[in-house]
Amino acid sequence: MKVSVVGAGYVGLVTAACLAEMGNSVSCVDVDAQRVALLNQGQVPIHEPGLDALIARNRAVGRLSFVTDAQAAFEQATVIFIAVGTPTAEDGSADVARVLQAAETIGQHLHDYKVIVDKSTVPVGTADRVREVLARALRKRGAIVPFSVVSNPEFLKEGAAVDDFMRPDRVVIGAEDDRAIWLLRALYAPFLRNRDRMLVMDVKSAELTKYAANAMLAVRISFMNELAAFAERVGADIEQVRLGIGSDPRIGSHFLYAGCGWGGSCFPKDTRALMRSAAEAGTPLPLVTAAVQVNEQQRHLLVRRVTERFGDNLSGRRIGIWGLAFKAGTDDLREATSAVVVQELLKRGATVQAFDPVAMPNARRQWPAHAQLQMCEDPYSAADDADAVVVITEWREFRSPDFERLRDGMRTPLIFDGRNLYDRDLMASLGFEYVSIGRPAVLQSMPAQPVVADLAA
Image 1 (cartoon, helix red, strand yellow):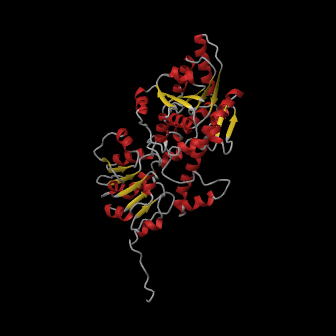
Image 2: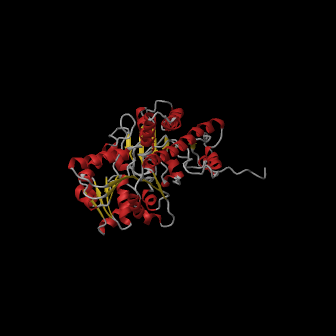
Image 3: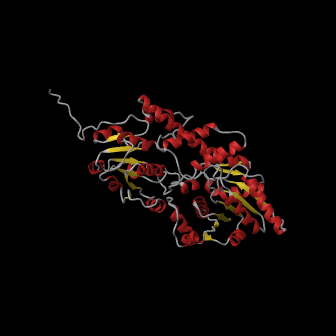
């Protein structure tokens, strides 16, 4: 099938590359000529495991192209995906201006039947607005051309997006005519060979499904973070609680990890947009609102822990930061907890030594130079002579470091673990003061060597 994807951002690139991998002819259109040029030179602007190889392979065989010429791309396509950004507006709503502009451009070049697919995350009712924009563009031209507008929200996890697209747990299609449904069934059939996971519903239900899914996951995380604070107060271990409730099949084990807050391009934006849409409809969502409030508090928790230990004035203190990306597997710094932590530590006078295995280039571009902010080349240099190390991102390479090397290089062997990566007893036996989330703190270091009782005594 011939497909066009509008937008060479995160969702657009993954969608285009994965569809091309299944044999489709895909043109990815973007107004950013520099980005298109870089992609045609083989440079992928985002970090997503497996995406570079997928793009390179399909470009090499001619199934995937990157262009700025929308007219040529649309003329050859049967299905056109709109996968542009929908950033948060000042009032908290999703700004769909780029979606509507893409629809306007499509309408200017529509000459035969197309299926226009909203892949971007958009509020309920956006498909109706896209349909109106397309119809208005056709009226301006005096043209009568049939088309369908479909909602097909993405459910891609950053760090696992290629696998999510290639082996989806569900494909949601919001459509109202059989021709569009048939075409999308054919397009997605190669991804659903083992089991048909396509859910066909009305357009508005499909639009709401995306927001509902992210809000549900955000609520689960915030619930666990709220419960973690209670667990600490009463001396319980949130990790044991997580295992206990996660074993209940009605609850399941996913998204039950306490931590230092959620971020990224989806949860913050989508929860705010859902809250705004619901308020406008006269049905506010206090549960989602509470989840957002809990998360905002959680993003400041690690700094509170540091100041509880060292005082509010951190002048002369050196703090190592392990992890800057909002989650492992990505270089995405959008709404990352690290931004809150680094900013607050610097404001209190600390020297910050930061490391992330993937996000360092983005961090250097995004954060202005600061005399007390040092970007390090490895986790151990970030910990050298540090009064504490703060773990923010759950990268695999942080899970089993050389603890003796780490301890010996630090000024104070103290770890604030925002992701509960380590065993408390192990950290104590290695001589670390260890503070995690929702678990009793190991405040007194134990000897590095185990004490063996004298059985003959």
